[in-house]
Image (cartoon, rainbow, N blue to C red; front, side, top):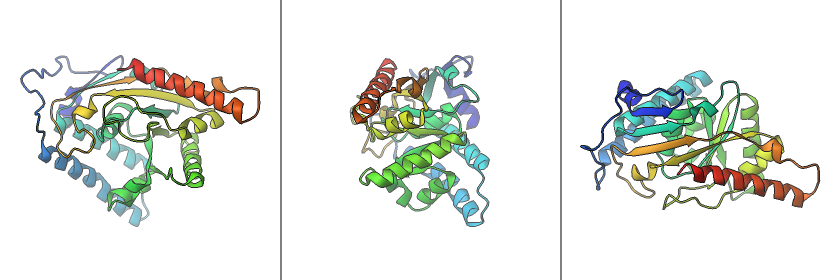
Length: 272
């Protein structure tokens, strides 16, 4: 399975691909999709969740082990779904630098594909409802994922502070600024929290455009599709410190944040 994944992942730049990319003309995505594939994805997710929960109960959770589980899990998801993943711009993911990763959000499959492209050393800021799911919720909490409650401003601020600490420790933090999956694939309005964090902590944002995952599993659908082509573009980093101003006051900060949001949005749009 992992060999199949490596054949299906390709990229312009330093992320190597098979000499002969997969030909999909004879295996077009089914209109109905596959419930079995969706269930297999759930199984693989639970298969890495159980050990993490057990490790937590025994007090032996290790980050490097969680990283490897996430990396391996993402490769298996790519292999099972036979995803034709084209990753471009991976040279922008520079070694030794930590990024606040921002991407658009089309499908649940965005998650394993970002791990497949970026690696295991990344944690998501995600909605708190996921942490209430049996087994899975406990696993992502113990693995270092960050819950955010957008209905409670103070708790949301606390979550962003946890993200700041993770970044300071050398862990990439990933947030989808749209806040939810797009039903059409078109970009939704951005939430401001991640951009506030980037400006206040003077972080470097790594914008990523994901295009095609909506065709694997559309929002609200239960059946997943095989043999879908997905393009992922990793854009040049954007240093939020360059948007800082010597002026003070809410108006000055808001203007800087709006410029930063506009530039990240423009980067996303260039990837489609």
